[in-house]
Image 1 (tube, rainbow, N blue to C red):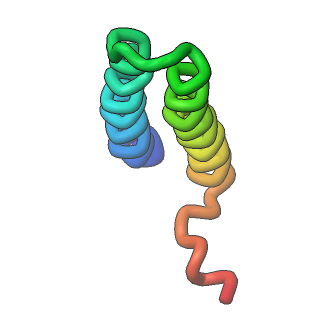
Image 2: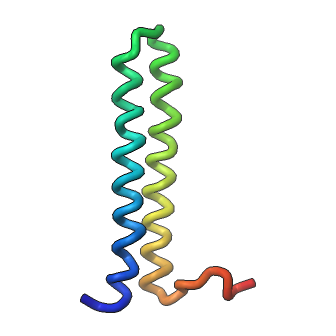
Image 3: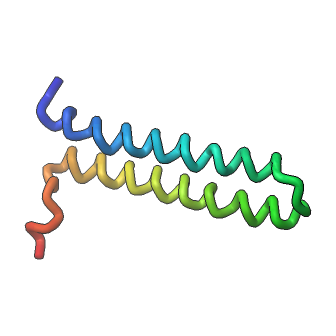
Length: 75
């Protein structure tokens, strides 16, 4: 395993755990007895957070592979 591949492990594991955690809320929204409007609104928030976290993971993987590992060095 390359040195840069070791740096990919932490963001991937954290994203997987976050998606599982938010996915639990997503599925829980459908088991709560509230009107369907509230179920839809309640499920949109975890769905949006899952989408954003996957997008951030993809961007982080691109940064690591391109060698831009330290974002603070730009400032």
